[in-house]
Amino acid sequence: MSEKMKAIIKTGPHPGLEMVSVNIPSLRYDEVLIRVMAASICGTDLHIYKWNPWAQERIKRLPLITGHEFAGRIIEVGKGIRGFSVDDYVSADSHIVCGGCLQCKIGQQHICSNLQILGVDRDGCFAEYVAIPVKGVWKNDDSMPPEFASVQDPLGNALYCTLVEPVAGKSLLVIGDGPIGLFSVGIARASGASWIGLIGRHPSRMEVARRMGADAVYPSDENGLVSNIIDLTGGYGVDIVLEMSGSAKGLEQGLRLLRKGGRFSAFGLFSAPLPVDMTNQIIFKGITLYGINGRILFDTWYRMHNLLKSGRLDISPVITHKLPFDDFEKGFALLMERPKKAIKVVLMLE
Image (cartoon, rainbow, N blue to C red):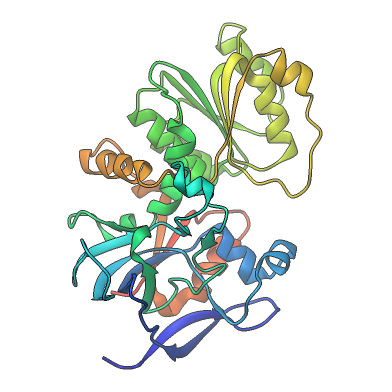
């Protein structure tokens, strides 16, 4: 094997990414080396590509190999590894946890105090090979296509957000038509939600929401949107709101549309602090509010595996493009195109 590999790198504090030749990473005793087969582009990667204010503040080391969503095969294991072997077909959780902090010790590894994120705090998977601590690695079913296996990180966000409490027999509203919101529609349908609505901004994506199982879709600026949904639910509001837009308008709509005693899962990230009427919208309504970060290790991954293998969850409508790895610039351009048409773009290495 060559000592060099192709990698997509953020070389400096400016817009854009570059394909360069770098050394194949060396292994620590607790890591596996994986030959990447497929890697998907995330919104975080777009932030880093654009070098927007979030990226300027968050990225602490350059140069950096980007990317954190992938699938591949193990080609080498560290000396301390048990339970994984060469040629295992794997993906990995992008949250690299320490295992020693309070959160890790009490079963909350997904919010580890010393969390490192692949492709943000350490070199990522937009490369021919990636080295990953084995405690974050997941064995895939050999029948799963690499493009499906590569998007389990965001699919897991959707599953955790949707199923943090049961949805069977309940009405559920997704606010936001990004990939994770669309995945949530499919998960809610497969898990028995009685009615699923989605509020979005992009017609092509709202059409995909219907294909994923939404009963109704609403443009976010539709006149009478709130009153229409309230009327549809008998004047009560929906049982569950998944806020995935990260917008002030989405938050306001979601809190108004949630019934008394309902469940609100907050996943979308807001660019600035927002005022919230705690007294009337949260306390007096008696709602349950969840902040959703990452995936539950590894409960979320087991559930994803089971839903995908059962065939009840089909994520193919969300994966709109598969491109050769060398065409990464085209992939980023597709995701920055307006009006939005691409949803999930997967870069294929084999």
